[in-house]
Amino acid sequence: MQSLVKKVGNVLPLSVKKQAVLVLNRIKIVGLVVRGLTSVPHANPIFILGNQKAGTSAIAALLGKATGCSTSIDLVREYLSDGSIYPQIQSGQTDIEELIRRNRLDFSRKIIKEANLTPFYDQLTTRFPLARFVFIVREPVDNIRSLLNRWDLPGDKKHLSAKEMREIKKSWHILFNGEWLGLNGDGYIEMMAERWRYLADIYLKNSERMALIRYEDFRADKQNAIKALAKKLDLPAENDISGLLNVQFQPRGRRDTNLAEFFGAENLRTIERICGRHMEQLGYNVQHAPE
Image (cartoon, rainbow, N blue to C red; front, side, top):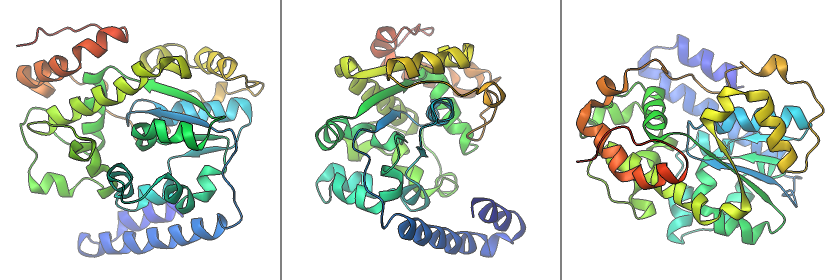
């Protein structure tokens, strides 16, 4: 179904493309609901948390392959919809139980990777007292650059235009507007930096219950990073993953980007001013002097 959605998106004229993909997504959601009717939440899952585009998908997928554990890469129903359930949980309009009900199949698996669950760490520990948690972090300047690359957005502006916002998938809009998390940011770069700091703070306040992987360390030695993570989680890593280490689990960003040119001096200073203290606690250098 995923490949069919992509094929439809590639061949249809723009005037009908969005509607056709929407219909196909709804069909896929129905399929997920039907398949999940008999599923029950896993009693002791492993949650892979962190920011989007921090390597969470690759690490979760490789961990699942190495250990033979069933793995969910994102709560697919929410990814295909508008992501509004997350602000609704935060505001108290609904709760984690409703999220689980809507995503029974994904919550039935041993490894559950969903970056949007990170703000709900406390609720997850209450609902799943036997769960284990992994937090993936990526240096914030590079992380935000990769997020913007995902939607071909610039990094040197104060605000995105209405046209640029329309290009972003609806379920990703909550990454660019952090008001639902109580964040304040003047423009999209400030808001994304505030979000990075907010998520990093969740790890730093709960580090005794979370296994930490820095994306940069994972990329330097993927196979041993996965083996070490499996050991921390008391999982046997008996399967050979050497042929999967360079598989692209998410659309690749442009790592060769000149960050100074991409963001401009002011936005670079903004990111490191907001994230600097947490960067240092997580072993990252603050390279650009704050204002």
